[in-house]
Structures are given as structure tokens and as C-alpha cells.
Length: 242
Length: 246
Picture 1 (cartoon, each protein chain N blue to C red):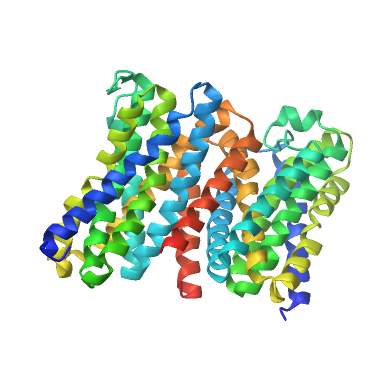
Picture 2 (cartoon, chains in turn cyan, purple):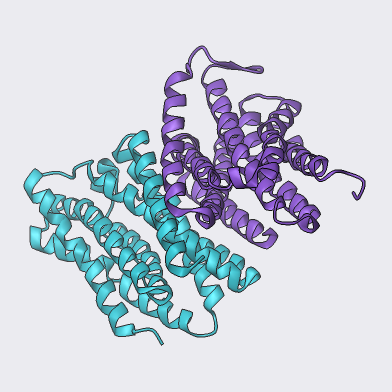
């Protein structure tokens, strides 16, 4: 059985990191496009981890791994479609200013739940992989927290409530991480690995990658994402022995 | 096959795998209208297939040397950065393609051809392990090349290249496989140390190409959910396919 208390603590910590996004907003008075680097880094790392999980899942059970991944992709796609969230883009200042607070919270809740699955599964596979994911997602949460806090403040929220609301929306990390860790530890390992990989892949290509392209130039993003991805695959293969 | 010398066998095996790449152009016989959306979808599918293929190259490289693979990957990224600077965008022409379309299609063929060099070496080195597996390895690599031909055709066809030209350039991109397999088979000891650099180089070049060229263009002309679905599904299919073959 994985240490579910540890998974609860670290996934909560990653969500709370989102509150620190308020700091650059208070200092600069606006969201810096530099935050695109954090998103590109997260995209590369999550893609690398997604690959490792998918590979392990398919090796354990080919059909379950592939079907699990397809279900993961389909579930995030369907939850965006059902809530009309596919158009909410946190990297677009005009869009973020116009979107209702409710939409921003739903969008962040779905997004963070998918990331939570990755954290939970990562910890079961290897604690080092889990910590790497928590660190990356925490950093990426600061970037998202900055965009969210700026939007909430533009609607009259004070700095502390804007920061608290941003972090609160990310707390869906916790149930998703704990649930995924418990599921993986049971009989459904290849399904769970595939599912987690699918949610991460879709999230990278529907949100992280396009948002970082918008915030930074194509070349820088390409280098950052490729580098992050290769490092993770390298680490992962070395850690898990292939 | 008993009458063939091992050398001819390795070359033939490489040639069969190269020809199989041309099959990747076939699905485009059934796609008639080529709107900007179809280009974007094709880019997204090519991106997923290429990302999947480059991950596998990295993992193969690690078997022969981790640091060499990393050095190779960085050289691969540098190589494409340089090629982009050297290739003129406006005045480029490639087959019947002109300008920016030719630039992108040419870049794609260069990247995939470079990657075949390393794969060819990998084939030759693994044949050195024993001839009994030869037929099996050949079939596996031939099938594995089809989606790579699909990736090339998906970039060229929507930009106006003919099916025959898509098929030819797909085969061309894999010709280094037989050419490199033979010397690698003959001089396994000399080629083995270079292999991780080559595999890393190919993976770096392909990944950078995906993030720099294919993905941004896909996002421009279609919705993000469509790109997300196509890239993730193509990626999953490629990994599943390769693991089942390998």
C-alpha cells in the first residue's frame, strides 16, 4: 500500500504553491509573459512522465494500457466539452478578464484533478518521480496562480482572497492523487498507468503547450520542452531500469 | 534465404524496410479535400507519431550509453536550428512545392532521413547478434516504418505534393537504412560506440521539429481540443504499436 498520507501532504503542498502566484502580480502589477517558461517546462516534464507511465502500463498489460490511456484522454476532453471549458485560455489576458469567476474555477478544478492523478501515480511508481512531478506542478501552479489571481483582483478581490481562491481551486489535486494512488496499488495497475498517462498527454497538448507558445516565442519553447522531456525519460529509464 | 550471403541479406532486409515506408502515403489516396484544417490535423497526427518514435529512440540509445545519448540529442537540436537558419524560406523549392511549404516539407524529409541513418546502424548492429532473428527484425522494422512514412506524407500531401512524390520521399528518407546497415553489420565493434550518439541525435532533431514546426502550425488552424485529441491518440498508438512489435 502506498503512503496515502504522504500523497495527501505533497499534493496539498503543490496546490498551496498556487497562492504564491500573487507575488509577481503584486510586484509587477500584471502577469509576466515570462511565466510561459514555467508552462513549457511543465509541458516537457509531464510529457516525459506520461511516456514513462504509458510504457510501463502497456508492458504490464498491452490492451489495458492502451485502452486506459484512451479513456484518460477521452475523460479530460469530455469534461472540458461538457463544461464548455475548452475555450478558457489562462494565457490570454483579454479572455481571462472577460471570463466569469465560476468558469475560471471550474477550468482550474478539472485541470488540477488531471494533474493530481499524475502526482498519485508518480509516487506509487517511484518516490523520486513523484517528487519531481510535485516540484514541476508546484512551479507551474505558481504561473497559473498568477494568471488566476490577476483575474480575480481585476474583479475586485483583495490580494489575500485572490491568492486563497486560486489555491483552493487547485485543491482537486488531493482527492485525485489519493484516489489514483490507491487504485494503482490494487489490481488495476496497467489500467491506472495508462489512464494517468492519457490525462497528462491531453492536458499537455490542449493547455500547457499552446499557452506557453502564446506567452513565449516558438524557438525557446521548443528547446525548453524538448530538453525537459529528454531529461525525464533519461531519469525514468535509469531509475526504473527500463 | 540460405543461398544469400549474410551481407546481401542485411542489405535486402534494409531495402525492404525502406520500401515499406512508402506505404505510409497510401491513406492520402482517400483524403480528397485539403483545407487548412486538414493540414492542421495532419500536422497533429505527424507530431504524435514523431514524438512517440523519438521516445523509443532515446530508450534504445540508453542501452548503449546514457550520456552519449544526451550529447547526441543536444547535437540533434543544434543541427535543426542550424538547418533552419541555412534553408531559405521564401525562395525554397522542393519538388513541385515552393516557398514556406517547400521549406517545411524539406525540413521534414531531412529530419526523417537523418533519423534513418541511426536506425540503419541499429539494424546492422542488432543483426550482428545472430542471423536467426533476421527475418523477424526486418518485418518489425518494416511495419514500424509505415507510420513514419505517414508522418512525412502528412506534412507533404496537404501542402500540394502528389501521392507518388509523398511515397518516393518517404522511401528516400529510409534509404540510409540499408546503406548504413551493411557497414554497421560488418564493423559492429566500430559502430556500437557511435550508436547512442546517433540515436540521441535523431531523437533530439525529431522532438525539436515537432515542438518548433508542427505543433505551433497545428494550433493556428484548428481548435485546441482537436490538436490535443489527435496528438495524444497518435502518440499512444505509436507507443503501443512499437512496444507490441519490439
